[in-house]
Image (cartoon, rainbow, N blue to C red; front, side):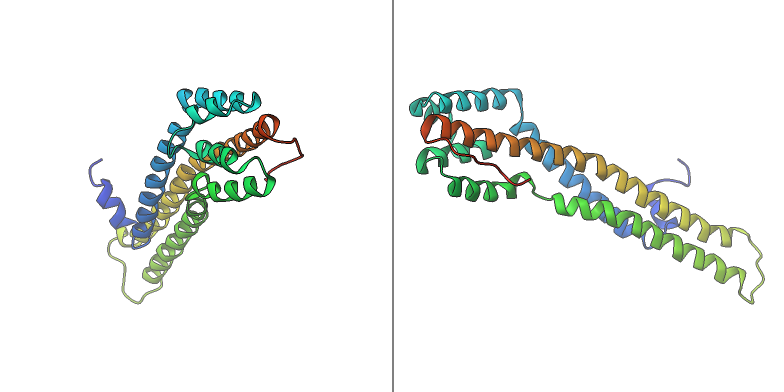
Length: 209
């Protein structure tokens, strides 16, 4: 890229590029961790085992369910184990699911904040770059090299583009992870319903979305 290598872009974008770079690293780390988490949780193998647990619950086959549940297991295993140990009670189910949401919705608030903050940081860089250019144009010193003014304009454009790129790059993983979290919530409901059907009295139960 010639003069437009990575470190040159950081330098031309001004000080705002450093916090933008920091949040991009955080967003990438969170996205990779969540991809690993959801990839394992909703893999074809784990999905088949989850369905077998549901079938065992509906049939009231406690021994088969205990055989299928891993130790310590994923979030579905943890919920299913509590249903076996404490019974398919509403209060127990809600308590366990609220605890498990910490795993399924981990870092979602951070990723959402990055999506919101990145364009705002880009706008801040735009403002500082334009101010720099105006100070040169309105100063008493005669401009010899027009590139002095273009440096401020470049800073404004680079930070704006950087903020938008980071926000868009984080938005799509965030939406995917939210969809996976909703899918997990539906599976929680299915586990509790199946446990009630096979292991206890059937009552209306739902999770507030």
